[in-house]
Length: 554
Image 1 (cartoon, helix red, strand yellow):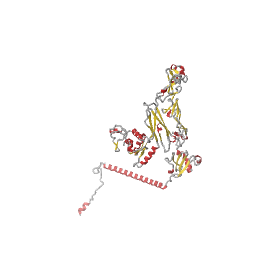
Image 2: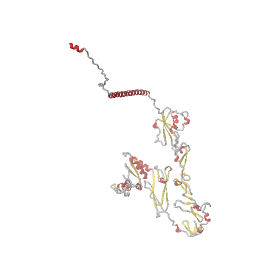
Image 3: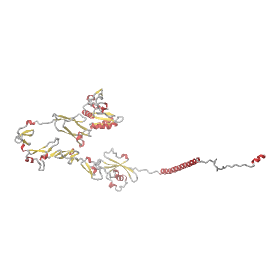
Image 4: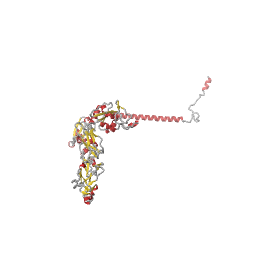
């Protein structure tokens, strides 16, 4: 996907736009290309900003490079188009960065099946319509423009933010003050036109600048006018043009008397200062201040003792950018003060979450909290590293007022009446952080009987302390004795059986090792019972001596 879609917005006849607010919804699930990416394909010719459509198909993608983001912004602005990027979640961060470069654009995340596209467009349109941004046409050389916006609820935007107002609803009125400054005359001296309009709309204001670069009133100059000290000059354009040999604003002095000591004395503030404070020349007893290279910088005063560029600076800006320099002293704009106009009298930056200045524990100086209580710190004196937590701080009072228990039950009425107590049935009835318009702290504490109780602490918009507490305690159930006893007995029996089996196993292993050792020694025996000389057989043979004779007689 490329950004070439934007270049076709100029074809009014093809798209059919009327003179109305224009929305361009661009939906994609991919990234984008811009100027320079065409080099990957060997295309280096810059885009010419034209459509080149044939049968609704762009035909010059092989010839022209992609347009740049600046080119895209120009085309959208020229045609008063507000863009809505409807993209998938994967590429949402990419188009969010693109949105920051394109004024009056919005980004929405499509669901997996794009079913939310209608709601996405509605939300994006509401976001675009709630913001007004002014833009101007190209300025002539040497001309600058500054905006100051007076927005809703008295909010004042200056500088670059002076072009826009946000959170605007139907019927709201905003005011833009525009200041145009010219540092010189254009070369041709012709009138110049500047057009100013809100982005996304066709209405515009046209300002024609007519430059008066030279005075032509000298054509009616009065020679030897009595206004020029007895006719010593020509009166032109409200000033005297002195004749030769005469000087001074009214030609009252002779050029031969200009450098006399009497004249110089009137150009000193006192005897210890330089002539015209060394910032000018003494002409006819009057200081004529020197000119500066920067036309915005100038010397002034009777003795050229003043200037508008040597005041105190803050942030490398003269008078902190919040005032003007007059005679080396800053004249601060509201609500700024101090010698460099860097001290704001606006207390909004010191407002704590409980709507108190510096949380009631400090003073607001130049828009910054100075904490008077050394335990508290932070930009609004709300951080206390050494203090007990909010939940712990209010635990005893919540416990005594709700359940009549705890260490403060005897002094509960005296010490714990500083908040409004609201009882609820269950935990889901407690205020949630996303539902309340002020910060809510959720707490979970345990009493002496190991029962838990739940509550929330908050300071509402009326600076009143509120505590919502669940009216029932969450106590743990008592132990079941029978399963515990059965478990212990079973454990002892099992351990005994296990020990007996281990002992039996060890004995079997020991016997087998001894028997194996015996068999090994038996096999290693070196003696033989048949040849042992000292071996005597245990078998004896005897013969009856009369056994043979009886047989013979028979």
